[in-house]
Length: 165
Image (tube, rainbow, N blue to C red; front, side, top):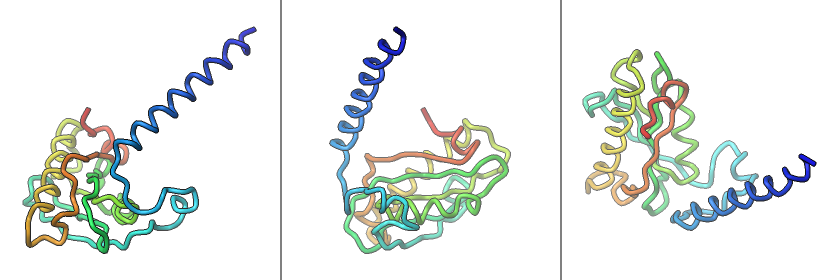
């Protein structure tokens, strides 16, 4: 009897998940080809990638901005933070990979590998602000490529623990 009750519940959960995905996709301004399994499993996405070094004086520990270099924007922006005691080299592959799939991505160093999640969260937001500012700077290679209203944060281990809520 319990398996009979679970089947409708599973269908309801699946329907809600499909609805949520449809809402998210409808809200996105998609660029590039549809994300097929083959594209997502490839070593890189369909976009060529450029990069910009970010100085430590930017309000966090500096980092690198990766962006789709041969495509018109705007693209969503993602700040990626390393784990406890880590630096951006530990998440170095994330930037080029996400940028090759159509995201302007900044991989950051934190000001101190020992900082706790609240400070990491602050530094992730500062990194997003920095990228949006660069995207509005006429002399920047990412001018016009950054959708300042479409930001996200991610991280490894404690870097993910610092993602703002």
